[in-house]
Length: 342
Image (tube, rainbow, N blue to C red; front, side):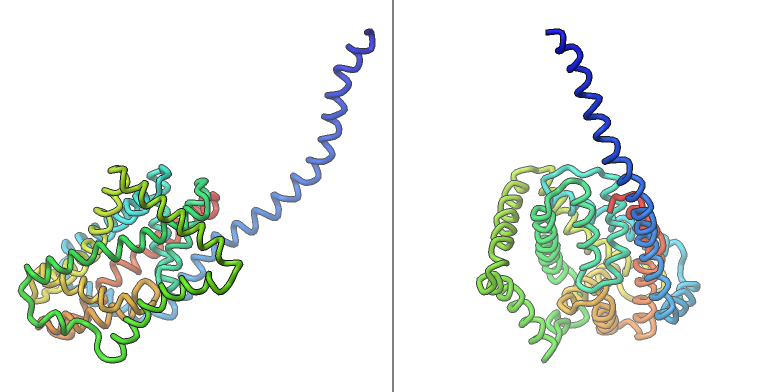
């Protein structure tokens, strides 16, 4: 009996002594390794920004020179529409996932995702940033990837009724059929739309290791989509944000066109962007740059705008939506990486 009080306190002291040598050598070894890696990752976006600015410096210089003669108030309105586009993207992201996300960090992640979107084609950069953000918020990877699929699908579907409304309500200078790509471009776009879903269905059937992840992804996506559409706090921001996002981008084009004195009405400028972005959206490019720019210039010229003004409008649109937000977007991306939000 007398041994019990002596054995009681001796056991915890022994365990505490055993723990100290195990944890003390490992703790200092992780901090020196993690800090430099995190700093290097936070500086990578700024390095990529500098490289891209050096390559495409002529576009920045020419766009800035042309915008110097434009109406500054309309350009300010274009910047406001650009900022509202981040809010719309955050609404769609929240509506595409059942988990409640912190509003401030969600908006900051979309500012960072917008910057990453201009560096990689087909929205890969934006989706990668968003998936990483969702995982850091405790969202499982299958649910995060399912939200990306729902986000992309809803964004594509929400633009269709907008186009129909503008086709029926807006007087056009040329038939809508002329806005579609012709010949091989149209065939490649149709083939891409058909082959991508077919490949997504055939590959898991042929490659056995892909079957289980593919089935888990489909099961999670269908379950979450059905659950989200029973909650107004989710499907309203999902669909309203998806419809507002292309309209806000189109309003940036309309603001720049009005600032430069393009002889087109506001609805014509908005519809020109919606039609051009839809026709050229099948071609993967960083931030849609390249195909959408060419299609938008041709669409504005088809409406009767002078080619020089149409080109200046597209350059101004890119300056307001890409170059001006790119530096703060990269800074936000670096800050989120350094604070381990990404």
